[in-house]
Image (cartoon, rainbow, N blue to C red):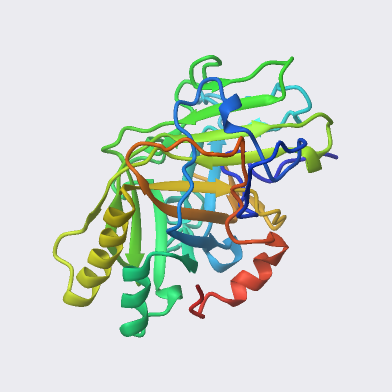
Length: 323
């Protein structure tokens, strides 16, 4: 049976953008074909690549109400060649998951690889800070309700999601009240850099056949600002300053990109009245200009860790510093 591993974010597998027209395939997509999402991914020479494994108490969750008396914004996919999966209403990182018992997670993902970010990488190296000490997290703030996280809103077609039975393209908008949610980088368990609010845009191209190998899926944010958390100790403050200097040098903003890793180790649980899908979380944090520069190529491959049959290899590299 055809199923999709991810319903909200997608996976990350290659790094290449190609300038020649490409056939429809899982690893590339012409973002100019988007009809409703206003933002676009921006190429960057400065990337922090993270990965979160649910079996190491990281990752992210997609969840929806299982109480028939509670209205929910979930719906079933209707696009041409889609598998008809449920689209969960909400998404949050493992630390803020509604699952029971509580996960006890302290981060959504761990830094695995650095490209560019010369000041940040030099600071890590000179202070003997391993990549595995740097984390990434997102979700509703700790004092908010689970439903205050990013969601499909009212789940209204033509407003919160866009799809047609006659088109293979689906676009979704996951939004939140900016005061209710947070995205941040951590050092150990300490939050050091706050990332600004953006909707999370998700793109599904189901391809010319019902098979999954001609599909493309991606998630990304608008370019947003980043800021240092107040009251840090000198070491953590220097780490945040180095990161922000690299961001300033690259144009002043950051953008998140999430794409399909091809990992199948997902699992389902429940908690607090919700069905919860626990998912691996490959995410790239990029330093970008404040205004998108048009890509010179019509197709952009997002896959940022290289050939991602290598996720198991990445897990083993959590404690090694690589460029």
